[in-house]
Length: 340
Image (cartoon, rainbow, N blue to C red):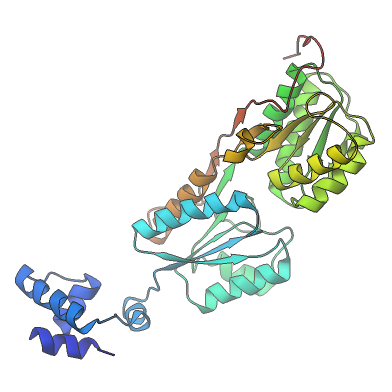
């Protein structure tokens, strides 16, 4: 396998000149650069990335930690991260915590051992071990929290407006005349769950509808929990439901089908998260549309800016959601006038 010395001999230049061409670290005249590039092609030379990273004190890698690699919600987020990272010459290392603290810690320590230049992280519910918390608080490497807030780390944060999403979903059902509105919430201990639940409650409060604890059921953002929540919640006979992520919506629809309920004739459903197939297969789901790609792209942009020293104080970016109305929601009766 050819090395940098072989390239230098073939091109008739110094090793320093080859290094300058490969690393783009200093000016090399066009004729010399052409000779070096031709030698690289002829020898099929591949730069030693480890040696390069030691010289530059950079690995040009970002660690990305998400809760569930099987959840299509995170696919588009990672796509946004990778597109932005690649544009600046970075690659990513991807891990999935399964919302489990031991697995989350395993990946974080792996990222640190690999000396990634920065970390993008969707926090699992719960805390961090004291030594790991101290390390991450030090800002080396820089870290951006994505999707979920975690106040114990004073880090840059990029989230969607969970409160607003819960509010507009519930408000939509209220505008259709529904009053007995259920909610399938996510797992405890995450800001996404808290925000969406708070938005749901505020919409009911503004409509002067009393809270009914039996109409709020907890899931864990996975299909099986959506099914279990559906069987529990549908026994309370709501006329409409907000399901706070798409995976749980799949399980909920399975439960409704087994109980012989049709959507929206018997139950109106608003799903949280939107995907291309939501507009294809019946019922076509009314959905809270989160800016998934933008969340990933923005978080990577913020991390790269932090790594470049462009800002010192933690920044918090909240991206707006939208509501896409489709056929899974329908009027219960003539919509009443809602209280403002």
